[in-house]
Image (cartoon, rainbow, N blue to C red; front, top):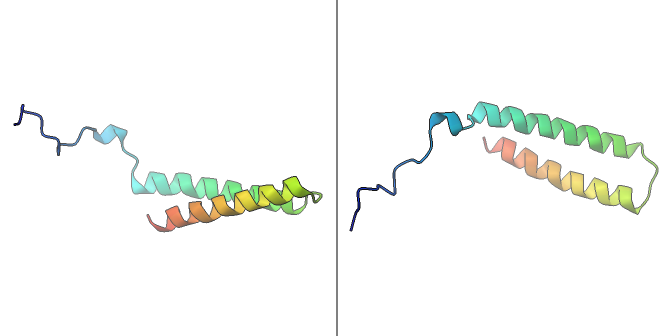
Length: 71
């Protein structure tokens, strides 16, 4: 039974949305930031914490690049 509410209706306005261009720009900025951080770690003295950080940032970079490519 319907009470006048269309569940398929949009519950947002255009003001709430990111365009693909805006999302792509934000992703690109984050990708560049992660790449810079990785480059900084390449020059850091070695250690388990540095290696762990490199692994985490590498995975993050791959995920960001995948999302960027999907736009």
